[in-house]
Length: 307
Image: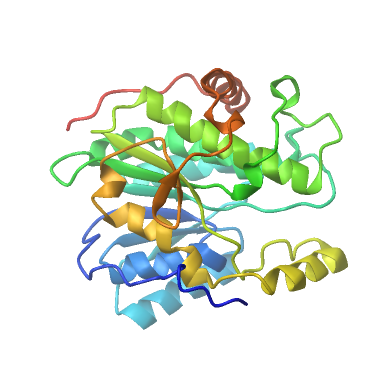
């Protein structure tokens, strides 16, 4: 693992997120877990979303033990599947009518192409459609948080892997033979396009939505692909940063004035930069928005906020 002083991870102020409800997907491991601890130490009521109940429950217990907090809870869902995406959103809305922040972090690289039981290519289903489902179905709770503390915030964990990738809107279900890194890159491009499309539809005084590249992080990412995945992970670890460093930009956007003053941007190491030209294509973002809502079974669920 490399040591890079530009990837610092200073702690958030102890009261930076005091009494705010923060939902983090993919929170039982990697940067999601590191971010959950930072938010907990900053006073947030953190809800961990994980796929494995025993592991997620253990992380919740460990976080409370390490931080002294009694406000860490968890939800279990396999976000590969549409019904579990929808059910999770419904449970979260019922339990948390006011949500101050959502971090869409759960994702994976699948080196072999496969479809889910919904007939969706699984990279697209997990890395993009789950972001859409949770964000838009939780929008009423997010908009309810807007007020004197500022807008609610959504952070979509994207990646520099979007650079050089194109997106086929005619086949988002995955019938064409897209797999491995190309499918992953396309899903991360979709994350940025979705961020821009949502930002264009909701006033930033109500909701600020951001996409980030966390860096190449020394997590278990890609290790789910058997022997080839383990080899890939070992190679990646030579160039990787820590999970704490990888969580830095997301944590900063949740707590800083900058994270509540602009919307729709793509951030790397706390700096807003331009993503690829394709990721800045407004017509493509609008078309992806429309098609994603169709696949998610959603009407356009936008409304005003009380701010």
